[in-house]
Each structure stands twice: as structure tokens, then as C-alpha cells.
Length: 477
Image (tube, rainbow, N blue to C red; front, side, top):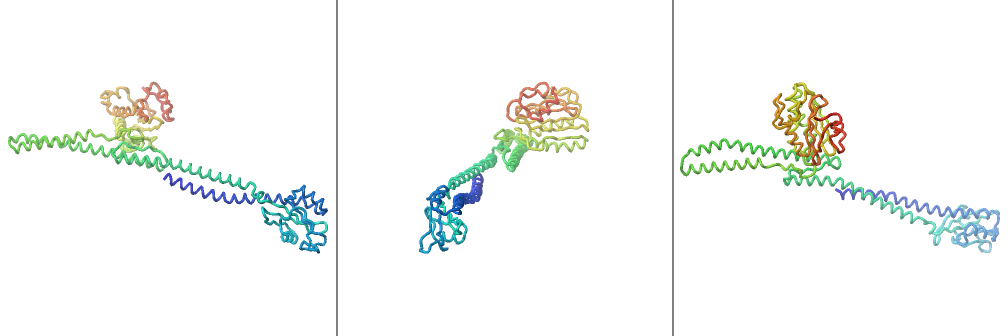
């Protein structure tokens, strides 16, 4: 693709350069020719006033010398009573001043036509300008225009045009190459991610970058990889669960085999039952111990938090409508990738939303906000309930407030998910009037700095605009 773009750009630019440079070069050559003959016409015009006054040879020679040069200009004056063919009665040429280069036929034709003409001679061209004398005769002023003067500056102009054309071609190739790299690199990463996923590296993800089409392809690939990981995990859980269910009938078989007494058949039966039980145990351990490769095996590993939020809110919205609860989702309209497994984020959201439904009255509003920063993603789950009187006790595993029978296990699941990325969880008061649980998911893997007091003083680094607004408007315990 990269070389194809370069070739197309090279062909198009070359055609444009040729289409403009060739006509422009011809125009430059014609302009140089017109300039040279215009100068010749001015030199001829400088002699015309003198010819209309006098035909004296000495005076005309001085005029010719002041107007041009004897080598470049000549004047052909007919004798008195000269025939139209330019010869006198004896066949002799009339008075000529300067060197003649044009033929007698060309000079006679100019006298007869009465208008200027140009003709080619050795080494260049001549301008033949007719001038009327006081006697009514027609003199001809001949100005020599050498070829070097006709082409003066044309070579330099053509060289400049060629250099500009070459620069345009080289520049277009360089730009096309850079554009090709910008398009090819995301495509190559997408291909590499597909190969890694095909080789069993389930944690392989691709960064969402490049043109819009490739970004959409990267988002689709990462979503597909997450689904593959989830399907494999479900398959392992199903295998482990089915194997575990086999242990009950195996126990019955083992007890029945023990009551068979002695004998070869009884020993073989007991051996077979023991072997079957060992195989089932092996299957259970293998299925339970196998972990999907969801670690950061490449850029973009994890899940799309916005997609998970939309999915879980779609699930809980049905129950919210049944209970007359108003709900809101913000910030989930574009992909937001975080280094957290899809199942872990879904379990955390379910735990928090489940707490909202269990510990607040029907009709209580709730909201989920997703904020994407430069180095962190913040998930806010807030409600309009009565709030949590003892946030520290609620965060402790196995301890609750004592008034509602909560164990705090759901919040502990959320805490472990956030801390696995270097982030944390905080409980505070929401703008809705109830509880707000803030999940801080670190994107760069660093441990989140200690946060005290108001949220405006939580982070020392530059915060995302939305997160900074939230931090200034609320405080944590």
C-alpha cells in the first residue's frame, strides 16, 4: 500500500509538472524572441527620422553608428529614379550602409509590400523595416538579431522550471511516503495482532490510531479479542463445572466398588473407578488453573470501558424502570480502553449498581459517569440515597455498617480491580445527594499518589478537564 501511494503520487505529479512546465517553457522562448525583435524594431525606428530628412551617406553612417553598430545594422537606400526591383538603369546597387545579410529578393519584397518582415540568415535572423524617404522612395533598414540574443535567458529559465518540477515531484513522493507510513503502520499492527491472537496470545491488542477506518477496525479487533477471551473463560468454567458434577456419581461408584468384596473383577472395577476419579480431578485442576492471557501482552490490552458501561447500564435500566428510578450515563459515547479485563470491570459495575438497588429506596435516582484523562480513567457511580455513614467500614472486606447487613464484599471487588492498575477507590458525597463511589483506573501502570482533603488537591499532575471539575466540586472523607 505504501509503495502504491508513492507510485500514484509520482505519476500524478509528473503529469501535472509536464502539463504546466512544457507550455510555460514554450511561452518563455517566445517571450525571449519577442524581446529580441522588439529591441531590433527600436533600433530601426531610431534611424527612420534621419532617413526622412537626408540621404547623405556620411550623416547616415553617423546615425547608424549611434543607433547600433555597423556589424548589426545596415541601411539600403535606392538611387533616384531606381526601378521597383531595386536596381538603376545600369544594373548597379544603390547606396548601402553597413553589412548586408538579407538577400536582394527579401529586400525588394519588403519595398514592394511596405511593411516590416523578418527572415532567417546565417547565425540568426534579420528584421527588415521599410522607411519612406523625402523623395518618395522606400529605404530598407536591416537589423541583425543573432541567435544568442533570441535565446538569451531561455536556458536559465528552463533550468529553473526543471528544478522546480523535480522539487515538486520529490516533495510529493515524500508526502505520499509519510501518508503511506501513517496508513500502513496501523494496518501492520492490526495484522500482527491478528497473528498473535491466532498463535494463542490472547492478550494481544492493537492501539486505536491512524485513519478513521483503521481506528474502527482496531476497536472491532480488540472487542473481538475480548469476546474470544471471555468465551474461552466460559468454556473452561463449563468444563470445570461439568467435571465437578461428575464427582458425586464417582463417589457412589467408589463406595459400591468397595462393597464388591475380593476377586479379580472387583479389583479391576475399583482400579477403573480410581483411574476415572484421577482423570476427573486432573480435568478440574487444569480447567481451574488455566488463565486467559489477558495481561498486557501488547498496546491496547484490556477492554473498552465505554462499551462495558453501556452494556451493564442496558441490563440494569430494565430493573430501574420497574422501580421508577431515574438514571443517567455520561462519557460512554466513544471508546475508552483501560488495562482491565472485561469480566472484572463488568463485575465491579454490577457490584456497585447492585448496592444501589439493595440499599436505596425505590425511585432513588442514580448515574454512571466515565471520564477519560491522559493517564487515568475515572468511573463515578452516584445515587440520590441517604449515603454511607462510615465509608472506611464499608471498604473493609467482611465488615459492614451493621444497619443494613452489608458485608462490603462488592466494594472490595471494585477496590482490587482498581488497585491492580495502580489506581484506587474512594467513597464520598455525590451531587445527587447520596453516595458517590469513584473508581480511579491508572493507564500507565504507576501507583496512584496519595490523595487527601478536597479533590482539587488530589493529584499533583495535570488532570483531565472533566476530572478536575469533579475534584473541585466534591470532597472525599
